[in-house]
Length: 245
Image (tube, rainbow, N blue to C red; front, side, top):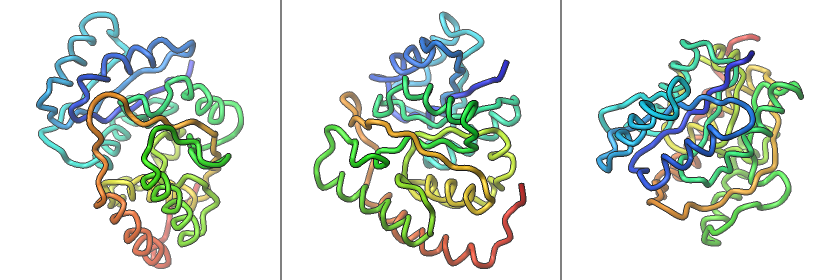
């Protein structure tokens, strides 16, 4: 039987973490969950460790880090952990229910049954499927993805998506120590690198719902990193030799 891991980065997610873990654990396909907690002062990690001792034993794990080190580095730590523990399919997902846990089944199906190496839960594949975001933020995100797609020349509608599934071989091939960005640009860099190597990337339409509990970690600086970072990413790709499949 294949092994499936959902990586959930957290910082102050006490309102959401127990519910999101239970939602993932309750799916008809068995997913394991790895929480990467960046020293949440609100006790998020304690909630996870309490669940590990009770109902989620052997399927729930945590890596605790000393402070806010960035979304990208959290996922890289999770990817390395997943490779070390020989998971076949590895997924990224937010803790705040902006990604519907049921959509993990769609991403898994793309990877396991439809030949995808990377499966993206896309907000923009069939229009704009975003709920409860301010219009300015929707437009910023949508046109940022359009801009990234144009500059990098990738056929991906939602380049900044944070709901993604990978086959292990993709993460083994991508040189993780060369991934430089930490915010939204991290998501772009991972997808662009997978595309440059030649992996099959497919998108699945999802509905993204803005968090109802807790506080968003989004900032204008994250978007600035993405907008400026893609230019550097494109230029550096002209001089870089990517791994071969």
